[in-house]
View 1 (cartoon, helix red, strand yellow):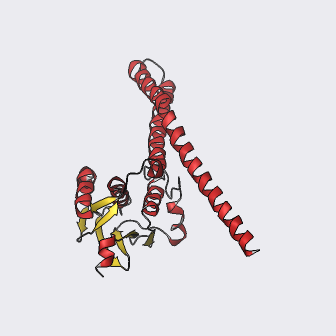
View 2 (cartoon, helix red, strand yellow):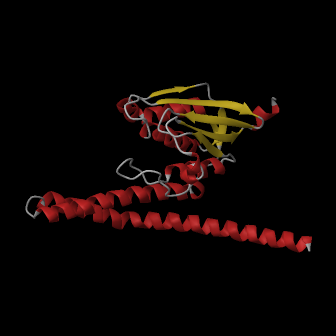
View 3 (cartoon, one colour):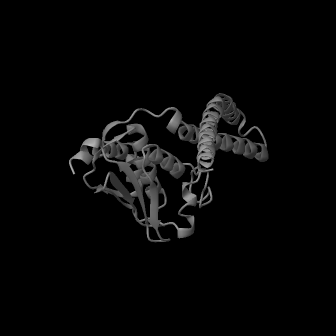
Length: 249
């Protein structure tokens, strides 16, 4: 009976893995194939708006504006969905990645947003880990972008990045001084398309943290957060240490 139960569990796990792979492939193909028709809708609607704006009544101008805005938001959503599906379908082989240099590149990419918000970004000495550099950089970028976006009113964001050794892994943290997250939402924020705020309050598609979770799990780690409303948020994630680093302990 135990052997039958184990065999049934193995078959179920294989079936679940196949389903996940098929779903990821479908998401990639669907989002990729939607790009071209959506691009045409957006381009021709913008052309229509430029050519006929002022020649139609106010309602018509408003309707065209709604179409342009909707097409742009859908394009952003498809791009994010494509990025999410590519974590496993288009991921690169792991290689040694200097996280100090990686964070410096992320800081450069976010230079305008950091400057406009008055954010202060500090970092301790970060390790070299085995990773997909593009994906790990995306994790840092998403977490820092959120720290800038969800800042307290009238307050320049304070963001600190750090890493400490912990057994056979590195524990990274990204701490901010923003609006915080209530405990009942700690799990929800990592789910696909989940948003805690309206689009009018904060822009976004609700994919960023789900993408971080998928990337961290692909690297053999975990991600979680500690926060309280109005008291900032700290995101933690782990990455296994390099084999040589483990042997030297």
